[in-house]
Length: 241
Image (cartoon, rainbow, N blue to C red; front, top):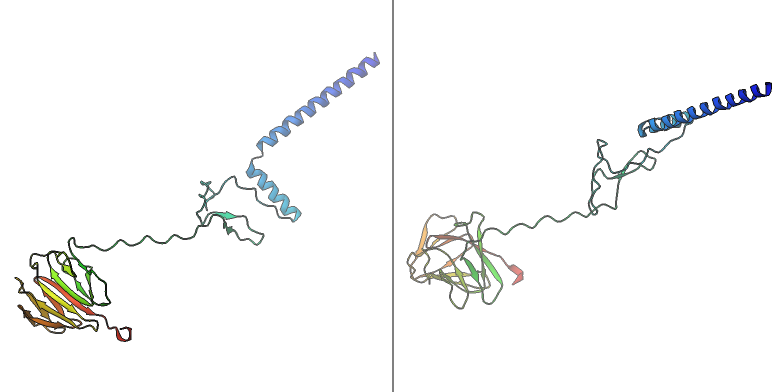
């Protein structure tokens, strides 16, 4: 009988021990489930503070912005100010270098507006002597090259030769001829044009009217073919001749 009681007591003790262990394991599992990453990090920080050691923060599952909100990864070949690597122990976070892309050049500027049907054609290029600049149809200015040679001012492009075409009803098909020398000497000869050729000298309000006559042009003069006005710009070549 005593043996049976001892057996019952031992069995009861084992049963209680099993129940205690089972309850402990269950509670341990519950504790494991309740330990969220935030709590784990807090515990590690406190342990580190007590032990006097530094503990690395848990790795991020993905890039985060300055507010700690996960964001999409930075595409390859691009750079973001929020793309950082953990500090090297000196308290600084450094931007990643493998995602840096060299700055792209700015988009090329679009060419300025060009008046349709106008332009200058040189069949054989020679040294540039100067320019004619007009603001009649383009507020940004139109530039026509003056090269060494003979240039016809016309409203219709001829088949051959050097010419400057002006799309204006006041310009005749054979309006005038410009003779340009390499030393910057410019001469204009009116071809009895219908609306005439006029010259307004620099720093003067008077106009010189040509009717089948010729005259010289200087830097700063304004020449008018019909209703079109052009400022004469002569390039000083000096020792580059």
